[in-house]
Length: 249
Image 1 (cartoon, helix red, strand yellow):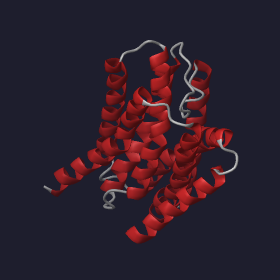
Image 2 (tube, rainbow, N blue to C red):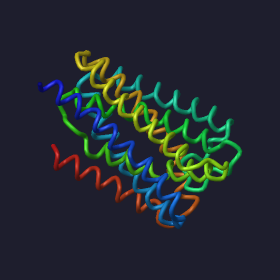
Image 3 (tube, rainbow, N blue to C red):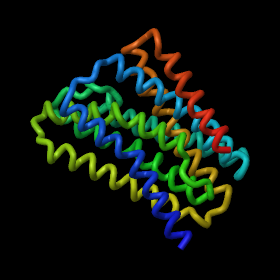
Image 4 (spheres, one colour):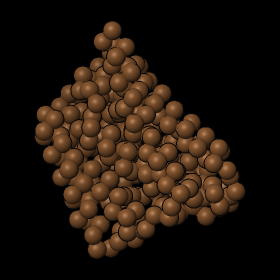
């Protein structure tokens, strides 16, 4: 019974984190969000993600699995993300974290593909956190959820420019949310009995990819829109996740 409950918890964590893609899409359909607000959300989310990576993922992976799988997984994740990001950029998805980065011509769909590539490793980590007995990782869920909002905004703006109706747009994001839920379940189910070394490697592959994503997309895009307060919002986000980690520990 406990395994069933934990499996549901793992899937729920993926669903919660991905649901803000739908939130961002809904906002893009109803209102035009001021760019300073988007920049603040992105910078805050970037700070939360960096803190969550440091304290919730990398440090714990190193403690459980050792330095070699932690370092090798982290580096591999960064390389994989940068390669995927380069391919998506060439296809028109360079600005998938922007609120208004998609300008038609199919780029909205490319951004959605980018969201899927970003979301799968993030969701696997959420499932792993449950499998490891840690329950829901609130800082990581919050960080992923915040970072998904501008992604949903950006892609939906592009899809609207391409003439797609609401049914298509929300069908795409609903599918990505479902895929993220399944990824979290798989992360829990397939790696539940894995050794500490393998879990450390898989965890840090996702962590390295997420840090590369933050460095390549979120912080540069936030800074481009608000060159004054980006660092402050990122710092507040980092401290927020750190406090949550310490209180949860």
